[in-house]
Length: 374
Image 1: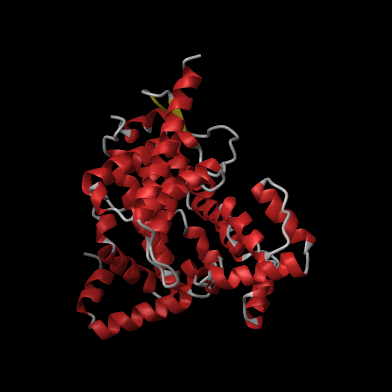
Image 2: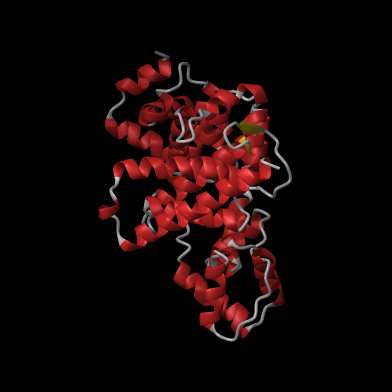
């Protein structure tokens, strides 16, 4: 036990609370390198690493030897935004369980990592730290409720009243279809048809306090960007932070996992039964999406498993998730869910979502078989 750990064991609960509060105050200012420097200089970083390792034992107990660099980065993330750290921890656990088990298809994904010169530990580390770049995003953005009803009102004003050409162009580009409507109901139907949310298009300046807009400008962030666009910029920050920490594979996996564009694999895995080829970072992305949809947040309830799987398949249809990776993941999730829940226990909406997902899985299976039987 280190001297810092010994000091922590001797500290009272009140002292630990004060130390943690001070550390969170330092981290709350943002800027990863500045946080790291100030926590180190204040003597709080080692103390907080010890706390985090104990509090997240469900994650770090899997490490035969905890990497001090990984623990430090995760500690800074926890101090900056606890909810994001919890999400990353659960994404890690969800991904770990999926890649190490025998899937419904009979395959174990982790057995393929070595052939791509990516270790299981590197992949799981990327899962654990994939949102580290959020320490560069103002905390009031990360914590924003992003209420869909409110956002819809703003978007209707921009599209139906103002006829804002930039907003309309962005919506059409994202949907890949011309936007023609004369009513709020038609706009809502268009967004629903293309699985779009208003929060992706409403400028941040419209939903933030003037002081928050001023802070965005001070930090070089354009307030004309949407809240979601600002949050998405964390990927570039994650890539940079992980790269500077000497974690190049983790940097690429974490920094690119949201950016599927059908441009070809970086870390392809070939799964034998259907000749499927997926990218390792696609697995991280699906674990991330599934966890985000399932978790309960202050402004939303977690979706049921059938609804989560349907949303993932809708993302496949829209081209935002590749069908091969989704097939392996969702097919296994469907198998596990049906072992636990009988059809008679399902609500009508859940049963409908399961039928939708099963139909789409079958379409993918048939298309994959057809593609490789030529």
